[in-house]
Image 1: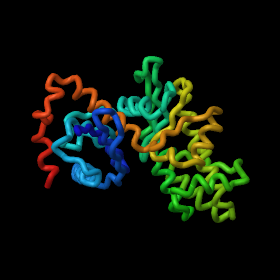
Image 2 (image 1 turned 90 degrees about the horizontal axis):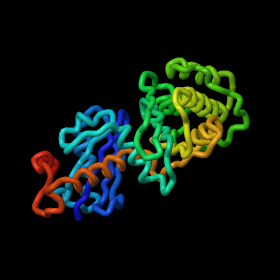
Image 3 (image 1 turned 180 degrees about the horizontal axis):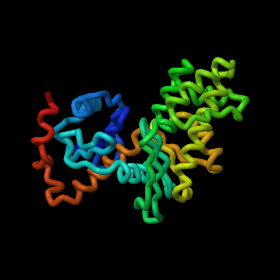
Image 4 (image 1 turned 120 degrees about the vertical axis):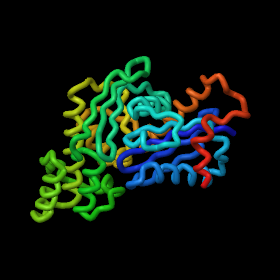
Length: 284
């Protein structure tokens, strides 16, 4: 079986999706990015191939995307994460016609507009400040001594949704959180306030474009049910949440890899492996 791979190298996590010729998602993996982008991505990819009982020789095309896409030297091609995210959203949306994507990543947040034909029409990105990103939530989790994976459940325990974290800078917000704890505010109320603050910040970002239904919310933060609640209330509409929201962009890149390969004149010759010289060292 031939397979096709998308590797999304973000600022905090490397996401890998492998699909078959029939577009079935056959393997996925998420690992921390770390400092060695290329080495960590290669190790994650080869480990996933081995864990999935695949053969590296059956890899036909690899596309890298994301913040560190150009640092992954073994890719057959690199693509913008905006395009890969849009294609991935169409794949994982299960029949919905996605017109807007809200993606909150480790260090940036994006609003992507999709036209009726399924192409990217416009996008807005905030990558200048950590507030409203996964890093912001990690900081809050650390200061509140609450597991980041449990923040959504803590949010739903809150009975005071009027407490907001007003600081728009992550550094000042950290001091504000510490002050709120010193004042005796409950952790669940502070967490709800953080999620509401992020939702309002994303809404302000979205105010520079037009948000149309259907709206898909992805990125690692889309696992946080409290943040979903805050966003849906702020935008006054339901969001579509993929089953595995963190790998949407990697899935899109994998589908692009399959499409590009299918268009090549060499397909479907079993004797050809695209750019094998780029991948042989991954066996080491």
